[in-house]
Structures are given as structure tokens and as C-alpha cells.
Image (cartoon, rainbow, N blue to C red; front, top):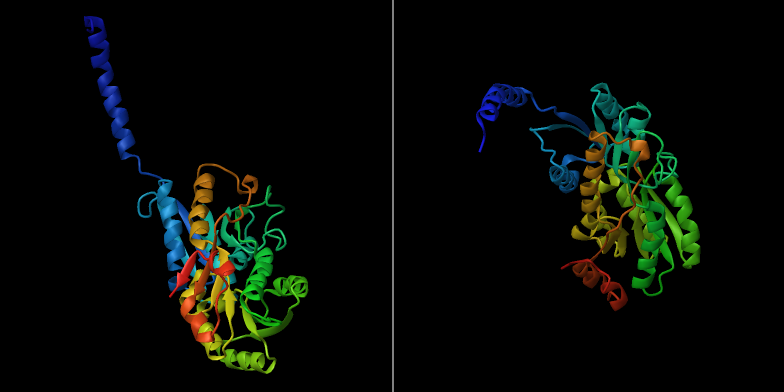
Length: 327
């Protein structure tokens, strides 16, 4: 039990404690301001952004409460990225989150001080985004999807799936994926495959590209990613089916809209992990000292309905590795 002196001291302390509590209650919570830049459209990126938002919530960051996000969408037109990046840099945000290497480059050209977290970089060292994966050294960090390494894996999957495969068409947006196009040739030669390049600049080019592939008598189609390609995945899958080309892309969405196969990192997981970088930086970490992570989860999706329409029997050695089968 308290003696009389302890009771008096305690009573005297209550007004000060109450005042301190009231001051804390009246102090507004600082709202962190984040930019979100993607060359894609809002609809194309919606599931990935939701994963990022949930990742933020896991760390206690909630939109409308202690965090505000400025969104900028390129809608598949990467030539818009410079202006969109400039809009975000002018706002003097705490962090800018980008969804791929193109968006990262656009921001990096404009600021060396605002931290940049890239959710899915292609190959950030080769693209000059960071000095090394272990020590980025600048204002960019985040996650790499190992683009160049996984191209060879997609060619291997096509080779394993299609009996007698010898010629593969490689579809890409003109002016993009130049390095990918170069580095995939050694992998193709090692597998005994000839690669036939197809370039498109707009939606009107797709029909001609597939006509060229048919004339070249290719056996299958590999698609390289870009914002324009991503927003046209369904059209590409439809043309591949019409031309009877077994096809493969990097993201699950392609198999879901009718492409034969997709293989690549679990992008939902990567976007959720990108939120961890945001949390660390908002809590004082330097982006240049946060190692770039590589994916730990991969998805192989197979559209069984498309395989049946093409008259292809997926080998058990491939089917057993599938993480998703689209019926």
C-alpha cells in the first residue's frame, strides 16, 4: 500500500501525465507520401498493386491513415514515362515505387535523392540500375526477375513440350528487349533451335507479324515482355491459337487468356515483398545498402484447353512441374 507521501507525489504527477497524453493524441500522424509508376494500365496491374497494398498493410502502412499513394499509369505507352516520372519527382515524395526497369530508368534520370523501389526489374546490374545486387550503392533497390536467365528456361520448356521443335519465333515490341534478343541466341543454339525475330510497333502490326511467322514455318512462339505487349496479351494469344503456334510468355495472365504456357517469377509475391523495402526505407534504411532480391517462387502455368486444341500432349515431365493448370 502507498504511504501518504507516495500518494501525494502520485497525485501531483497525474496532471502532467494527462497533459502529455493529450498532446500525443492531438499530434497528427505523419503521412508518408509514395509515388507508384507503371508503364501498364490500371486494369492490367490491379492484382499486383493489390498485393503491394496488402504488403504495406502487413507492415502497418494503411492508405488514408498513415500513407498516401500517387498513381501514374502509362497505359502501355512507354514514351509517356518521362513525363509521368517528372510529375512524381516534382511532388518531392518520400519514395517512388516502379513496376519495371523502364519506369525505374525514367525516374532515375531525374533524381538521385528520392529512394526508388522497383518491384520487378529485368536484370538491374546489366541495365545499369544498380552497381551490384549485394550493394546497389545508389537510390535504387528492390527485386529482380532474372529476365535473361529465364529466357533460356522458357526455350527449354518449349523444346521439352513440342516434339521436333526447331524454329521459334520471338515476338517483341520494336525498340525494346535489345539485350534479351542478343543473349537468347547462345541458349537457342545450345538447344538446337533457330530463332526468328518478329517486331511490332502497334496493334496493326500483329497480323503481319504472324503472317511472317507462318511463312517462316516456325514451330512455336516466345513472347518478350514490354508494356505494349502486356496490354495486348489476349490478342496475341488469340492470334497464336489461330496460327496454331504453341506459345510461351513470362506471366500467368498469358496462360489464363489462352496462351499455351507461361513461366516466370510469382509476380504477386514480388509486389508484396516490394512493400518490405518501402517499410525499411520509411524507417530510415538507405536504398543503396539494401540488397536487391531475386525471386524465390516461380510459376509454370499450362492451358490444357489450348494444348488440346493444338493437338499437343503435354509430357508428364512438364505437367508434373506445373503450379497452375488452366482448363
